[in-house]
Picture (cartoon, rainbow, N blue to C red):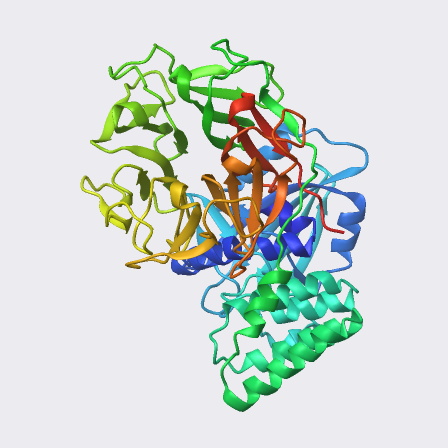
Length: 553
């Protein structure tokens, strides 16, 4: 996250806004109650040190999260083990933070016994700076101050991007992007805000006016006319017409990737060697540890494949097909539970969900049985969601529960809004909204939390290969803008459906069935890494393909 913030890439910051907001809420919830004196050490450039010297008796704002410690000895420990260069300097920050006098400052809280984390955007007053020639250490004394400190009035006179408040001001962001002549990104931001607003929100008319101005700057006068009409209608009726939803969603096409993929695993034909797969299906990308996990279906095993390696490693199963606790039978999906350092596996052929520890001192265990599991998903709360393709339902187990709850489907096989015809892969967002690949209904449905029926958001126009149709969808994932990505298995392509759109667009494949780098043969599993590179399980080509994100601008 700090990397995203420090790059000052506004588009990526916008994509990560919900994560930033979640962190802020957690810091607010656990806000320190007592005065804190904390320390932070850094090796910095001479230019950075010189800029700090000029900031004495002034305010500075930090554009990343700031981790500190209450333990002075631990703070300076870094300098005893760090390599110093002629062009770098050692610096110790001593920060005083009073939650009572600094309110409403950005929150700060203990996240470990001795570690205190400050929110991105925190403002500090630089009181003093000293230099100890004996140990070549500069000490900077700072105090956390309130955002609305009277002394900050001059600083607040210019526009500042407020990325860390509870509801990110996307309109300000769009305004700033417009000043930077990035009208394309400004339009996306305004679209995003318009989508999220209630239909009667008074800001709607203003946003339509701004979108009309942007359209005029693009010399798209037809679109400007539409936005102007919508604005007038809204201001008259105080209700947003349906037209803007169509315009917004058609324009919001999401991210883009290079069309020629890199093969990162497999592509050595069908087989059981460690450089081969036999019908790979599900995938989990762990780019923190630089490897992926693949459900190697007909080899009855889970493979861990490190980035850059030529072969994988059997991490679960691999003891032939069977129902012993050390065996798997046609696994279809796999995820990592970091809280327990274990894999959770859809053991499809054995009709069970199993937990497989990643350390050697624990044995696998059956979590749930009598379930025709196909797809898995775990949310940030540790709740587990499992699709049952035979019962045509999705069940949720809250963390620690033994009995699950049906949260989607469960009304038999069919094509009604409350039914599935073989539910396969699933995705669950942070709002507990469930997206289900409904295979033989050739559609993807969206189930809001506690909904009794789903909404068709992709396909649902019978089986076919038009932009409005799907053919046996499998993998499904959703980005932070609400775009839905679907492994359109029978059409050998990956489709993107913007929110509310009645048709999708191909983002990868769609060039016929084949084994070239821009082709698929029965794509199944989908995943993003932290940089939003796209990973596709190319099932009948026995390989995993990576499509690199095209950086905007």
